[in-house]
Length: 298
Image (cartoon, rainbow, N blue to C red; front, side, top):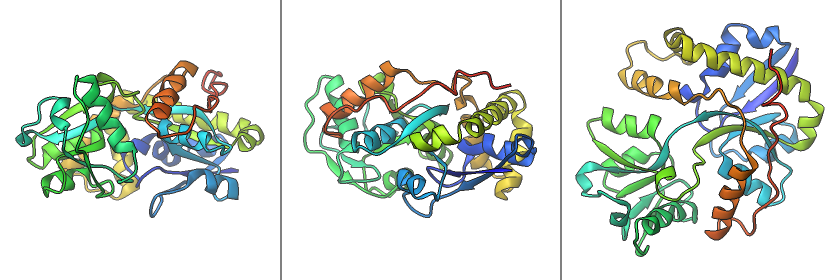
């Protein structure tokens, strides 16, 4: 059995169901793979862990892949598997109705007071014809809903529709949402697999088998979501009658994509936006390959 240690971008959640399916149904074992999912206790420096040998691959978002590449880290993305609708969330009771209303608001996002969250909100304000000013960064980690409900912030970014918006509404807090794709921000709310170029070259055959199982797991998710949900509940020890989990799971299933590729044009647009907003010094060469994503997986 060939071991593959996969670093998660967050705690184990419905975004990771295809991997749990591969583990429980023995598909990874049939492919000669011993797959371990590593959930971080706190923010994980995935590329440092891969370089040290603690991980083989990691799950991240394209924006972080570009950040690492712009810093000169040896990083390479090779497959995406989830694409959700992400953006800026607010509670309907706030009176916010359009991005121009975000001027002067308190903005909750992980990493505040770093520039990422304000870059997103500023871009949306400008796309709506406004001039960004008076934005106040707030950091409640990934607790977006709590930050809004507790009154610590007016808006939260980066929120995933299938998670935070569903959770807010489930808790009796009707939430509104401005999607990145609708207001001038490159749509980076996708989960991708990354590794180093050296690991990719050395473990290419194993990574190809991993993608075959991943693709098979996503097929099961779309074709038999009830069975997939049962696998998730057993793997995580979640109660069958957890209504919030059921809502999030149902909203997440459509987000798994059959197309594992990303284009050079996509990364060019993302890198140029990040450079223009001061998130990176300059656009790096595209840190991506479709070699495995386009290869036959059966």
